[in-house]
Image 1: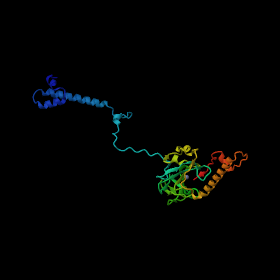
Image 2: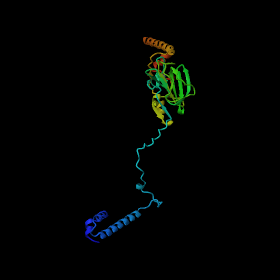
Image 3: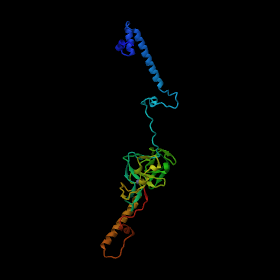
Image 4: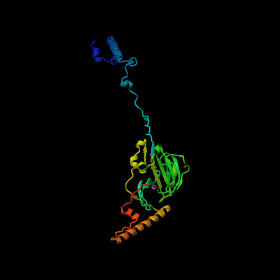
Length: 304
Ligand SMILES: [Zn+2]
């Protein structure tokens, strides 16, 4: 093929075409043939290259490579939220603004000789406040008791029960067998029964009616019964607390008087014994014998 024009215009078909259209004279035939040949070669090359690509639709045993099957880029559509974990039981504080004034454990009241198990917590609030169901339940007891005063008991999942004592009065609709949702009022905080001031006495029991420490459970939710920290909740601290009471309940005044008289008699007997050290006879009463051996043995009884 001719040398000059090819050298000048290179092998680009586009350059040749534009040059052809701009140059009416010269050796157009050669350029045209060259252009046609170049185009044919390029066409053959494209055809071969295309044929070399597998046709995925026609070859069933081949799967599309990643670039062919790539999904469209993710849009800003929000991913579906995972479902919340299932809740078997969730204990919320029955007095949202309350705080524990007297904890779960062994407690000795001023008119008592022996410590008793305080089977719940006493919660105090800054003012008159509604007492709320700690968790979903059904009213299984509602009434008035010398110790608990006006009280409500709810039964929950897995046989757990909660008890709300010393209520001033019951909330509307609270009756035996009524279902109560968590956070719904069961009554108003009060001072009924053997109470030493306006407060809520709150208990939680397991299905075997064993008292549990509410402070271990309050504020937590559990998906399964096995998740409940029952070992910790059942633990009774050994230490005995002497309860502080703002006033002696009327029902306990007689006990308080009897205890004071007993303590005075005991003191008088001890003084008499000290004044008569040479005496070989002992005149200790059963009460002083008990006191002579230190702290009285504890019997665990339930106390409200
Ligand atoms: Zn109490």
